[in-house]
Image 1 (spheres, rainbow, N blue to C red):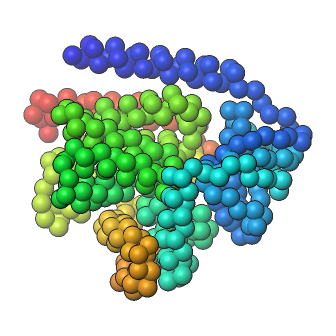
Image 2 (spheres, helix red, strand yellow; image 1 turned 90 degrees about the vertical axis):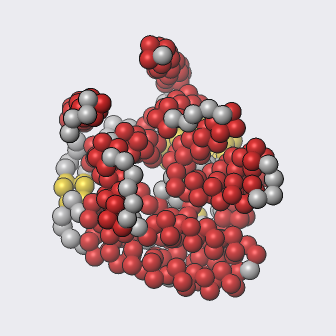
Image 3 (cartoon, rainbow, N blue to C red; image 1 turned 180 degrees about the vertical axis):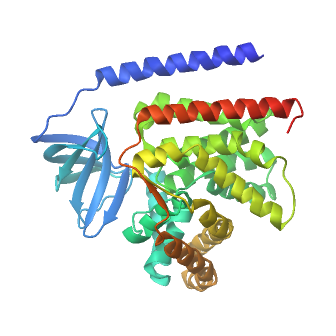
Length: 414
């Protein structure tokens, strides 16, 4: 069985290498400082000050469109773009990205009914959050529920990054578990379990669109769908297998994800939790102390696999990240569940939803104060740039430690 799995793994790696080769050899650089016209689809929108920055794809390249706040388009809208394209070079990297400033944009086609419904639902829920709560609290709640940080004040976002809790505003497996689990429980009260599982899988897809199809939520949605499909087929669900299958499918479909920081952090953090947490924490225990230890183990496991990426991307790492996570991580499931319930309520009874938000406000305020206070402390490791050789060496050592720990665990040694 192990030989078959190794052969399958080798085949998948070979297939990915062929896909990468085909994709990147056929991708040509776009002309710099030239007028360009193309039709594309809005994949992301980030409001900032009086601007909106749209992310679109064209000719196998990711392009940023800088537009005025009056040029608003929903996620999934097909548009025609005309403007001068500029080749930009990212700081501390050789990667080139493309920018079109204030292009002429015309709507070609509205989003599909499914995407349009998701945009409407998200808009009404976030409007209730923003109307009731102060800006930072509303942005924090929106980030935890939908994984979007477009409205997040820059200073608070920097504090989240410095204290190592930026991951809480990225929709992930916890979001998917709560959505699908809640739908499954509710529908299974009235219909057969097979039908309830099908509805739960559909709800995962709808929530992924609600969250803007970010790499982290797509990864979690695919893993969740595989888990529910496995229950329908009566198969044993292996998280590690599902993680690699999900990563394989995503990269096969879109090779550009290999250079996407969100995808890299999401995949490696999940891998760390799946592989390292059992070695650090062992079997699940009960009690408040055990819960705190579990939170710390999850945080440690996720961060130990992502430290090189964080240093490369942000040139800094907060040494107080474990302390900050220990202080605030327990509030995230409560805020997430409460935010989802209030979000659904806002679609039916907006006034009652606003009242419920005040009950959630103390937790949001606690989270905000802890992050803001610890974010001011100068306990940060800074680097100009992390050499790739060090990153590779780090992961080789980490892999060796994991293999030794697993071997000792199998032999019953401490």
